[in-house]
Length: 462
Image 1 (cartoon, rainbow, N blue to C red):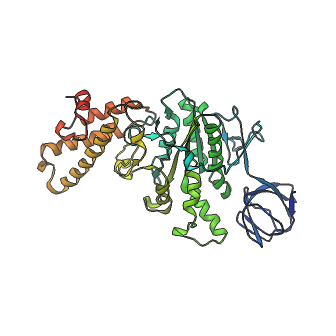
Image 2 (cartoon, rainbow, N blue to C red):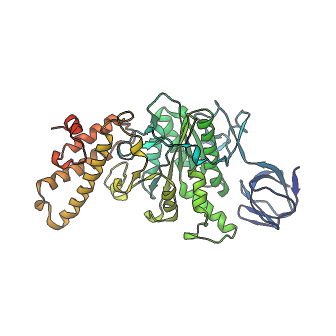
Image 3 (cartoon, rainbow, N blue to C red):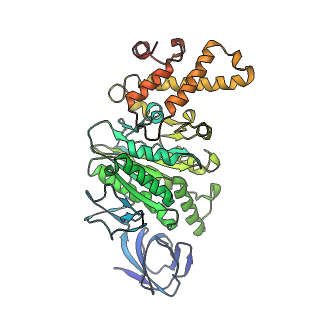
């Protein structure tokens, strides 16, 4: 039975405080009717014996303690999902179609009978299947050195002013599985500006892959609470297509830092005790509730792979958001400001990046037999190259021996020919490994100590 409240005790930002006079459910959806005829939606965020706290999805402008009726629906937040009516389209934080040019609703909703609770059900660890198949992004630095595996969580750590948006657009436009299985990409923009949203959508259309992409957009000027909802809306959609329609789904979330800022803002409004940098103490568990909705389930053909993107304040990888993310995910791709200044795209700092599941997905049956050896040798030789660069400042280039000079040529070619590529350049695994062998052949065979002899004999270019 629905319950109606006619008096608000207090309004702080997007939060309404009511006296608790009935058995309310956590996460329950409420309808807020004001005297001017407008209707807002909200959700129960917190309750105790005395107080109910409601988050309002829209803004609270015009609401007062006397002019509003709050209806408790006894229902949780659900999103409508369609098998045919979502591909190639753009939706807002609440799952409603939008016209990006006008930033307005096209229609009230999609036509479907399928509704899913956005908080879903966590995957039982016992039911998880270990990820072992690859996703090709067409980007050599990722495919060659930090291969993305189906069911993996591989975040991108960036900074303000770095080209993470261009990298995200390229990944969404080019990503594919190497089999004939159905593949879907879900793009989720969290707290982005309209120019960024238009850039992403135009890039998707130019790629010719828009029909395989579902986009959810939350704008920077949207209510704060919607930033906390939209990743869960996107992931609920992903779970439906992955585990009920047996598709492989790649979910790209940008920017997780905007999500964490919204979490901190609401925590402050609730007067919770802050933790590091003012973030709530439950930042880890809250981010885990997003990241852990990823993986493969035994007996299910589909999978969910996740690439969360976050900008590090002051480029600090020890900031609570990247630091916490690193504990939950299976690797990281770190963008480097110095490489970006040199004009290298994507400016991935390879020695700070890692893909912990890569070793189980690459090889003869998926990418190529020499992949593991080539990747290991590239990272080792590039590390030696950086050491030689430091040595030059002491002894000068004239003081280097033959092997050190060979490393200098290798390092320059590695950055300019392997890492660096065009923003619309789509390299397959074979092309990536061929480029790798061309630059490894700058080095004498005696320096390629991480590659087996039979691969050396087959691929080394004399």
